[in-house]
Length: 312
Image (cartoon, rainbow, N blue to C red; front, side):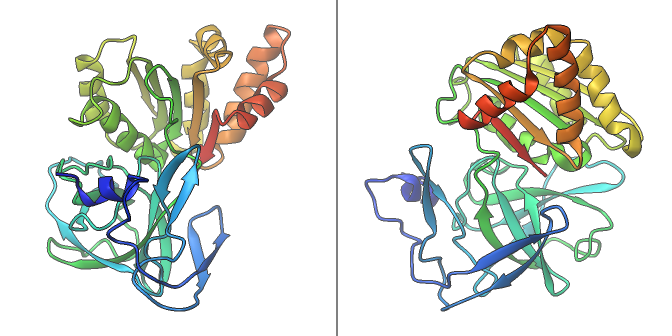
């Protein structure tokens, strides 16, 4: 039997969740994390709650700040770093999403956007939950307990989606601190979930720097269980103000291989972390110059081809 999200993503079937709703506009403030909104006519699901992206139908703004979805905090078994929390919310199979998308959490009178750190199957493997990585001091989360309710909106985002031609793709993930959250969901889809596991034949290469290294143990366990031609993980602990430099050092040790990978039409670069895009570009500019090539031109071409992804 199809789960609700699978039925919704089937272009031959009418979405069982689709009903009339407000059309709302979100303005991004302060680096894409805090939002204000303007809403129109109310309802439970957005009128334009589905969108075609790269030839596939994806969920988009199914729930609005005007009419959010009431999710429930449920137990999880993921160990979190000392300054962060992995939380899991039950949506009863009514909030379909794809890896790389985000949801909004209504907290303290505002709306904050969080990248989803689980795959579409959820940590429960039943497509009925989604997970987030949140800072422990984040407003609205410090006193949460199992059974508490949270209003959520979304899902949102296409920039960080996995490519549709995924099977033989090369995926280079670069992150600092909690910017790694969306990559955790993507890697679970590639290597853990019963639906996606075994289908991916390319390489996923994850570079992470920061003092916290969320999901570090999980990534190291994954690296031990997956052949190195399919997954590699390089995580290095560094103070927050040195995280980007630490990532650059990691990548420098593999600069020739990384540059060669980016020349391939099936290679994608994903960047997630505050200020990390500039640091990553500086690195590739140095590599390109050493080989008498042009990083700016390559980046422009990758963007046009949908192979350059930057968020958070």
